[in-house]
Image (tube, rainbow over the protein chains, first blue to last red):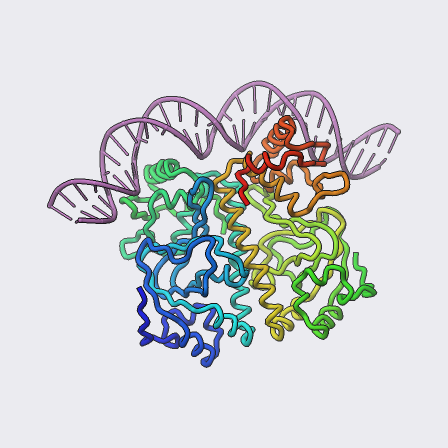
Length: 235
Length: 235
DNA sequence: ACAAAATTATGACAAATATCATTAAAAAAA
DNA sequence: TTTTTTTAATGATATTTGTCATAATTTTGT
């Protein structure tokens, strides 16, 4: 799992410019490069565990993760996703609270661990970096408000239609034109906030109505306009 | 509405120590004191409007507010509350996005407006203040995750029971022992994410079952243990 | 490739919740 | 206070969604 070959240092990291670390000076990036550890998580592996106190954050170089909380009777609720360039665990570090959710790799994921202290050291000397962290946290807070409103007011059908569009926006599509993320029906249900059976039924309906094409876990969106209409998506 | 009598300057402000401004030096607090404007909002008045770009934040000295988003067909969704010591509009300012929600006074509310530029000036020179802002935003993000999980997994009945306990925790109780906040049934519904009629019915049930006492908008919690059990509240 | 395990699919039914309609009560305005 | 408006209460009914059961299919591990 540990692959501490710092041959690719942060300065050459392909995701450097899309992370908060883009706000760092060359010297500050040295601090990160010297203290960071490279790690690979296998598909399905838990990266961070709800309730724990992490010693730092992970910066995803390549891969996809889900952030999920334990709900009633152990049922998983997926809160959000993370992909290349995203930082994991910063909420817990910056609020000085235990992790409010677990993070699990959806596919093999390469990430760099940056220790807590180095983060705080940089926050202390670089207000641009601090602002960038605030921007991310506050943006996420706005997104959370949208999700809350949708969960509270939309039907399962509406939420599922919207979620398919969100998944495409988040992960894009692959060569075959399918959503570039593989989720079980149960995971989709845990994301939409419904029973697995309901998700299966509604996806089948969408397929019947030629809005999507299903091939196992491969999902291809066909009629985005109609999906947006069903999902009451206006933006 | 404007009451720019700076007789009570920030240094003597009763809520100074419970706000992020507690991280400021005397000199930095001077900057705030010199640039701030005192304002009073009447009950029901909109303080900030969803979609707008605010020019600064409000710091609540006294009063209560609701933060609410427009949902499907104009239906209001209450996202969170704010009270003495809370800052309004910081999410939008720090993410440089339009307001994701409106803020309305639930009762006459005294607040101080601090212009955007002064905030950024202080962020630039005081990392302790920046960290405090991050702490608040990240804490709220954790709370949002809990709300998402509850909305996705709990029944309306469970959410209403839990919400009564949350309202008590947030606003406390007054001399008469009632929740120290006055909300219409519709507002409670818009908070819980259900139809007004369902809220009315369930509150009546809770009253029947001697869990609460209702007198118009006055709500007194009687059996908190049972409410917590119904609401699947464990903490 | 094969067996075992997990996931997906579908039907039947139950439960929760929304909607619409109407009346009663309370709060706000004149 | 009195009137007007808004809010609360309640019944009847429709709709949505969840639950349980079972079978088919796919994925995973060996």
